[in-house]
Image 1 (cartoon, rainbow, N blue to C red):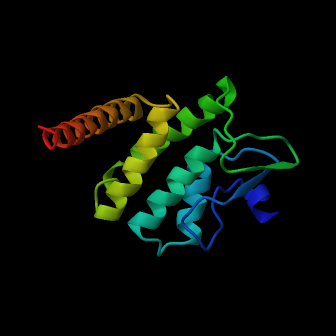
Image 2: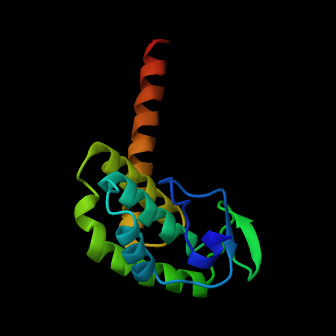
Length: 152
């Protein structure tokens, strides 16, 4: 119930998305992340980045007042995308420097960009996903070519 009152995408003790999200009202990304940083000043860069990504993804999850939905039910409505983009602007301003600080931060960022690309949420995500698909197809092509050489 506390997460519903705070509009938090993560449990306080974890840096991963919760499996479900009860909804009562929205709290802006900037307000929530400021409160989170004040409440947990010892969060690592990796944990802070993971919580920021979870919070942004919460903006495009299904929401009904007084109800809970799983973390994998998305509603890419105009309203949800609007709130995602408002949060994303603050995210870039606040956390852009963290995104490539460590290998874990880089992996977390790639996963987030993949999500954004698949769901057509950000230009950066679309570019990342496009390059990811090219890389996958190129890798698969060379695997197929290598298998074919065995037959000749």
